[in-house]
Length: 332
Image (cartoon, rainbow, N blue to C red; front, side, top):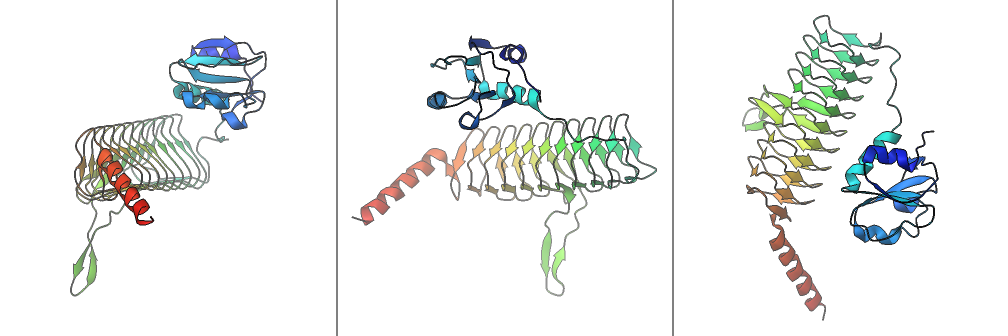
């Protein structure tokens, strides 16, 4: 079991230690569940009240904290407790699944595939013709990467993921289990003789560097050219991104949200859980779409939108307040 003194942890965080604890810290844990040898964190002053009843021997706290740690307990004060906690989690992280051999004998690697040095491929995975895997790529068991795809260095692809033909994934990406990259976009047109006719989807998907795609999420290929995810985008589980959508850099999409076809997101856009975005919609840089909202028109940069259909957040809150009053008055 890993354990660290408060001083060793602070060497990583470079914060300021307040108080004294001689206890060896064995794990990080949330305040209300922490044991006497565990470290927690307080990222907001409103959570100070929970410290007294916590069993944690230490906590990472923001610099504006106003309480004292107490006997044989200590705080590490930092500028951002949330970011510092991520460093502590890295300290205590268990090792990832082991590979006894770099390329498992039960993996299928086509002869024309190019495999970078240090790359590992698990059992049952398929690497298709003319695929190019960069250096130190990790392909866990039962991954499918089809013809002419490229995967950048240090990218990790977890079991069950499928990367369809001619798609391109950048460096330092993480693709979680059962994600689908490059499935056909949802394109059909009615025909009097044949019913619904499938529209061929001949494009691909291009994913930038440092992108993370959650489990069971689907990124559809473009109908004409490419569906594009910019550098640093973070996509949660069970997210749908429709064909020919284009995401700028560092966009966030929370679980069960979805983009219809040809949606454009600027840089730093945040899409809340279960939000739905209509096709051919443009959302400007830094805009936020609240959870469960339905966007049916363009959103200027920097706006926060709520509701179904989505309107500016302050207008949505006013509408909800009016409805609440009307309901209350109707019960008199």
